[in-house]
Image 1 (cartoon, one colour):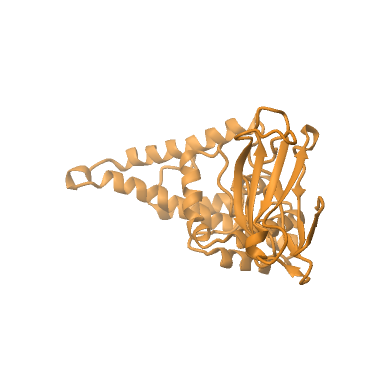
Image 2 (image 1 turned 90 degrees about the horizontal axis):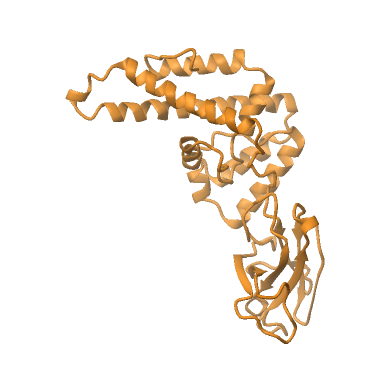
Length: 311
């Protein structure tokens, strides 16, 4: 794009972009472009250029505004299934689309043959590129059209500015691609999750408040019979959905901090006539386990409960 510039209009830029993308970029180039996108429902990597990160955030704004903890979890799960099948993240021009619409499209495209889906993903990537080129041009038009006296700013200068912006993106991408470890998370959900099953009814327990904490006391681990004020530090909270699954209790990170964690459930609110006003499950993540996933469910009845480490 830098070599093909300057462009007299956004239409010329889009035409050049389409020709480069579909006729001159190879399969590896497509996959490289796919991997640079944040996964739908996730924030951009800290390595993303500021403008690109801001555009990604804006394009997903409708989806994030219409998301619930349950739909986000479902989106994470389907994203994982999609990537496992096709080898790259789900690509869609998310601008103006709700979470429900994106989920529906993901499920619709999932049965596709890989070669078909690869072409669709490339088309969606092109839609994003076109959208961002329009934004790039419109931002320059606004900055150079404050009044008639400023309307004489040369087209050449504006084109040089655009080239420098695009070149900056290319430079940062190149710098981050060599000799550095990618910061894009390979997880599709938080490293600690849970769900609640009401075994007395044989159904998921919806509407149960859940809280996740980590031990940060003066001692390495909680000491029985010896209080340690401020020992437990809040990490996140949520409420179980219709499937009994909690929402996001912590950030999606590749490496979870080793330590002792506690998941607490407001069982008294869920079952006022039961024996347990609340239930807390304490477990430890060791240094050697920090890249693993920990699913810690609660199986509850009015007068008993059990747990296990799930998958």
